Length: 289
Image (cartoon, rainbow, N blue to C red; front, side, top):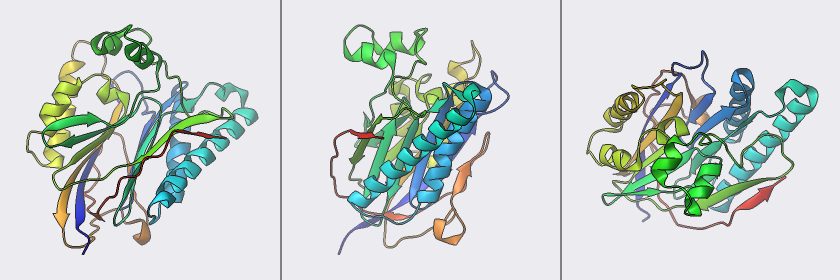
């Protein structure tokens, strides 16, 4: 008998004090978690992230194994094509784009897709693992040993993303699978959170033993402390705790019962619990176009 798990999920989004709208978008359902961080001006960034989440919503369904990765790649490629069409139709949108970080669940597996500098973290056994590598100029400088993580966090070019959805003919995605265990915690967030709160503090907060709801509240509070000396950044985050369970259970956002939950600015989505067990399978970065 295959061991199954349930996921206790909480989400939160902040508009921030700099802009009047939130260019970040998110989505939570029984089979999907996703964050998109738009760029290219207020209207264009909001549009780009919305297009990406729309395609994820449309692709949300039960999938298993490599089908999850194929589905994720197809949805992201379709979003990229739509963004190219929008720019061709309206030249004022040229330069818009969005990051994307998402995870898809089946009854036995988890698949992830990543592009840009939104991040996925895994807490396991008291250690925090950054599952994704930022596609940004400062991240490349860190990998080359030319900047430290702390220097990158405050660098004037920290927001320059080197790889994102935005209508380019070919973009580079990272697609991979990951096994989970009871007690794991997963955090998917935009750089509005990870670019402000250091990984050491994220480890402390995620490992604090609090419920996902309380953990997300604390993440918001710590984020506000870090930006107290400057403008609050927009940010969206999804926190997930893996728990052992006997069967699949969906409390909110069941895509087969009317759709998942979008993450709204300054809002907390209801819990979503699903059954999940995982087998690891790695997939090399692929081009989409």
